[in-house]
Length: 358
Image (cartoon, rainbow, N blue to C red; front, side, top):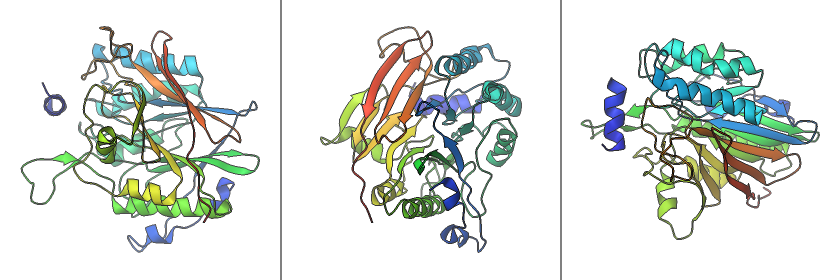
C-alpha cells in the first residue's frame, strides 16, 4: 500500500532581551500589535549544549502498539540527557486524543528539561483542534512553546535562543506546517498544508532584529517543522547536492505548493539547517543549496508504518531520535542518530556556510 493511501486509511480508523519587541510587519496582518518573546537558554558550564529531536511518536493511549513509542522517548531522554527537546510533530494518532497527548509528553514534563513541539499534520484529526491541543501542551511542565500570536498562522510557532556570555549565538525557529488544504481548482483532492505569508513575515522580522543586534551579521539558526519544504525534492534530484548520511527509503511528501520560505532563508542567510519529520522511512542528512536538509529518526511504535532498522538493513524495527550538539563560540555543530538499544549512527560534524555582513 502506498504511503499516502495508508495514512488516509489509518487517519480515518543579543541577548535575547534585545529582540523582545513589537513586530509591525506581523501586526499589520490584523491591524494589531503583537509581542514576540524568545525563550532564551544557555550553554552548560562545559560550553556544550545538546538538543534532542523526537518525531512521529504517533501515540495512542491504551493501545499496546504504542508501547515502543513511550519506551523510546524515555530511553532517549535517559541516554542523551539533553538540554532541550524538540518534538517535530505527529505526536498522537488516535482517540482519546487529549489523554494521548498528555501521556506521551509526560516523560518530557517529568524530566525537568525545557521542551517544545511543532504540531504535525495528524495531531488535530481526532477531535480536538490545533488550538485546543496547543493549550494542553502549553499547560504541561517544562513546555517553552510560545502562545499563539494574533495574525500569525498556525499554533506553536516559536523562537528559542541559545546564548553565551556575549549574547545570542544560535536561534531555533519552530514552524507549524499545518494539516492539509484543498486548493482552488483542485477540490477533488487535498494536499499537505504549506507555510503561510504571515509566518514568513514573522521569521523575516525576527531574523532582521537578531542580525541588527549582532552588528549586521546573521545569527546561526536552525528551522524545525513537521512537513518538509517542497525544495527537498529538487535537492534529491540535483547533481549539486551531497547525500551525507542516513536512510532514504521513501519519497518525501511535502505540500504541492511552494511557500517561498526556503527562498527567504537563503535571502536572510541565517538558517543553516531545516529539520523535519513526517516521512517515517527517512532519517538522512542532505547538503543542498547552502542548507542542510535533515530528517529526524522515527520515534514511534507500530500504530503507523515504519521500516527502519540498522542502516535500513535490519528486519528488526528500531525507533530512536536525532541529536544535535553545539559548542559555545563554534560555528559548526555535531549531529547523530541514537537508536533504542544504544546504537549510534550518522555521526557528523556539519560546518556552517559563510555569513554575510549587511
